[in-house]
Amino acid sequence: MKILVPVKRVLDYNVKARVKADGSGVDLNNVKMSINPFDEIAVEEAVRQKEAGIATEVVVVSCGIAACQETLRAALALGADRAVLIETTEVLQPLAVAKLLKAVCDKEQPNLVICGKQAIDDDANQTGQMLAALLQWGQATFASKLQIDGQSSVMVTREIDGGLETLSVELPALVTTDLRLNEPRYATLPNIMKAKKKPLETITPEALGVDIAPRLKTLSVAEPATRKAGEIVADIATLVSRLKNQAKVI
Amino acid sequence: MSILVIAEHDNRALKEATRNTIAGAAAIGGDIHVLVAGHGCESVAQAAARITGVSRVLQADAPHLELQLAEDLAAQVVPLAADYTHVLAPATAFGKNFLPRVAALLDVAQISDVVAVNSADTFVRPIYAGNALATVQSIDPIKVISVRTTAFDAAAETGSATIDSVPPTAAFGRTRCLGREIIRSDRPELAGAAIIVSGGRGLASKENYHSVLDPLADALGAALGASRAAVDAGFAPNDAQVGQTGKIVAPQLYIAVGISGAIQHLAGMKDSKVIVAINKDPEAPIFQVADFGVVGDLFELVPELVTAIG
Ligand SMILES: Cc1cc2nc3c(=O)[nH]c(=O)nc-3n(C[C@H](O)[C@H](O)[C@H](O)COP(=O)(O)OP(=O)(O)OC[C@H]3O[C@@H](n4cnc5c(N)ncnc54)[C@H](O)[C@@H]3O)c2cc1C
Ligand SMILES: Cc1cc2nc3c(=O)[nH]c(=O)nc-3n(C[C@H](O)[C@H](O)[C@H](O)COP(=O)(O)OP(=O)(O)OC[C@H]3O[C@@H](n4cnc5c(N)ncnc54)[C@H](O)[C@@H]3O)c2cc1C
Image (cartoon, rainbow over all chains, first blue to last red):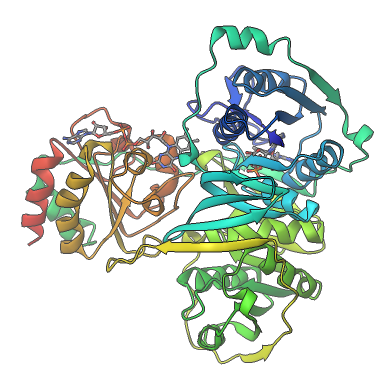
């Protein structure tokens, strides 16, 4: 069984995004970039399947600039076997990423693809579902539990509004990860060293014959209105009086 | 312009999020139709027909649509979409699950989490956990949009649209639902609640989460929310998580108890009208967004607050 995991390079979740002065986007110069946290969870899950003897190979794929190699190496250090970089300097939107990943899936023929449920930069929450649709596969999004049943299906518990849902999806299938699926391990130094020697193939969107032209034009990016810090009140009596008489919310 | 809104419902009742989405459609302007796909969902279709601004309700009724799996719902929407300029759904777990499939099958982009409509093709959406707002313009013939429900006041109920049935599409068949565990609660739902009491790691246990927060929520008729740390630790169920990767809420009053105020948490609640923070650490970032803060031990302050509200 082969598992494919798309991983995205994003602004580290501990770094506060700053909008560029010209309003063209978010400033990504000289800031820490990391693997999207949901994708780290996806890699961890795939590697656990391999350690359990269920998966035989874990392939990680990233779409973007050359620096995505670092992201792929980070995923290899967590235990993935092999990496593919679809290198482009174009700005990629989810539909384009899904089309690129579809082309890779056509070639690699994985039994399972595990995506993150959303990338924490653009927060689109689209790519996995789009990829599943293009492949005409079943999907289970927002997974908090995953169990592969033999070679034929995967059972997934999903986090939905109001509670949980359990789906059985025939393989090949696509799953997207939620936060509670697992806690990713830390890469050890020997594994980081080993990851440097693992195969990393680079291909281009042109070679895959995929049109990645953006469909959305970003006209501007602005800072949201910020909330001002309010008042620290001395005690509960003052709080209740403020809520009743000033804010009038209780 | 003609807009198709996909209704969120449980075959018995229309979810409030649908009314917010219809308000988003009204902001775009044009003829608004609503698709109710489900099984035995007449009452939902009737409820949709009463919403202000809706001129037509399409009802697709079939056994395989009862659970509204993403694969089946997308297959139902795609052939209908050709007649519309916009397809809208709420940016809830329901909408997020199936709508990108619709966009991919139509070969168009999806615009996620729209918070404002500038024109029929230009929309505003938050990115980076709400730390930036992007204005994006779509060049696609059909705009597929998920609507952030807190950004649009629910449409009223003064309408009387016609209800037409549409033929159901074939079932996908390769995904099965084995079960749903829906937690029933007498409290209001987080989405749409006027007051939310939310607890974090500071509560230290599930027992405390309930013994401290339940009386406050009862006294205020509030919904209960939680930080990710509280959910991860099992104090509260997963669907109580407020934040970038949980629920986005904007109540009249949000009371954060023992929550530090990480960016990811703030992303889910900073549009609340009034924010109250109770935290023992005066440096906690939550105080930077709170209208009113009380510094001290939540185990003393919250019971005091319950008594003071009376
Ligand atoms: C301020 C700003 C302005 C932008 N302007 C433009 C613009 O003008 N034009 C333009 O074309 N784009 C633009 N973009 C970029 C584009 O919108 C996003 O990068 C794109 O939408 C991807 O969305 P997402 O990563 O949130 O997808 P999601 O659907 O949230 O991603 C979900 C999952 O898909 C997988 N995935 C996503 N991307 C990749 C990837 N590259 N490689 C491997 N796996 C991946 C991962 O598993 C990820 O967890 C802009 C982005 C920002 C932040
Ligand atoms: C990819 C990603 C996505 C995330 N998504 C979300 C999300 O959607 N929602 C979310 O909430 N988080 C999210 N997080 C997690 C977030 O970064 C924080 O870790 C989390 O919000 C912290 O929860 P907390 O405030 O309850 O805990 P802490 O940060 O540990 O804060 C606990 C607070 O309680 C106070 N306290 C302790 N004891 C008392 C007492 N007796 N009386 C009064 N105060 C007390 C402390 O002073 C402290 O400020 C995400 C993280 C990542 C990486």
